Length: 430
Image 1 (tube, rainbow, N blue to C red):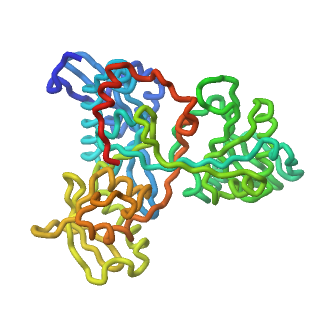
Image 2: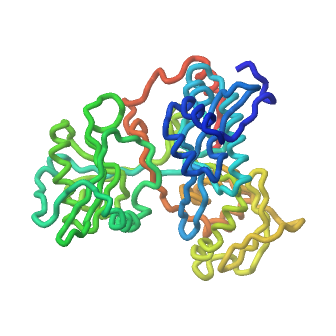
Image 3: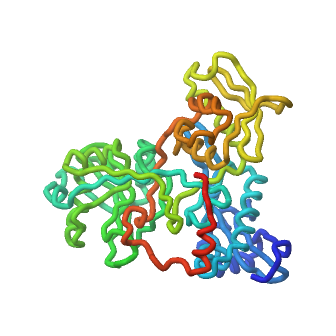
């Protein structure tokens, strides 16, 4: 680590040689395809350099996320190299390279028009850079014995997904976007995609299922992370298909990462299943799905139409008012009226409502409403009432790593002594 911070720099990986170097550092050939997909944005593959030596790499995928009617440009972190990421920190407690790369990355995202960044990472590292957990983790259970009693439908059949099914599956996936995970943290080895086909080739359901004999990796031996159905018959057909695999694997119950109101969940609950949901963990050694807003003004501009919808014709203040929304170091002037909130040109002397970035991020994502924040988080206190109609709780969902649910899957020796000493110094506000 001997280099001083000022000797570091980050370069975009542009040439074939640089992309190959990033692939080796990240131990992933997928970087090549990401670079090709995003060749209009060479900054999506980034190299940490000291002198002539390349020390680390960071790669993100460009995505567009919907928050209500708003569309936000999101950088989803694909990987950070072990020399400057989690692996190095766990062993040594050193994070200088990691911190330099992440701050450079967030500055780059702000300059290039991104609204926010998403990572799946450890609470020991990312919240220092204003990344905060923003998702609930749901699962609906059904005892395997209950599912084994179901009969496969005589008019529906389960088959592998084919290319021609893409449009139909896309329509299914668009039916209940708020009732299934927005992000998927847990990998599923050896999983395949299936369609439930009915008369005339119509698609009545879709699911992915992983079956593995590996033990100790935290993934259930039979796991269905994605499932969509149009009716109860399709749901029971999927359960009847999966149950024999679960029985063979010795699973007493199957679980699925869906909200309780999803039609597949309803079928499971009616058949004797049950539902669980949990928020984020405060276990510093675990991974979470975290967001950082990189440009507050851009987010507010993108959300203007959605804010109008949320105010529903008159839930804002009786009289139009101008104020500064201050999110840590960012200040945005807004005009707030009964039916809308609009970004305006800044004016001197306007009153301020101050919100920490971590709190603004969780409010924008719908993880917490302003009234759920600790007293004094939003200042002045009247800002809580003002912002509440704009930021309702919407229960965003994620498929988390399985050790968030099952403590027995956690690695008790994940961190060395040096890393644990650094972790003890950390204090987070969220």
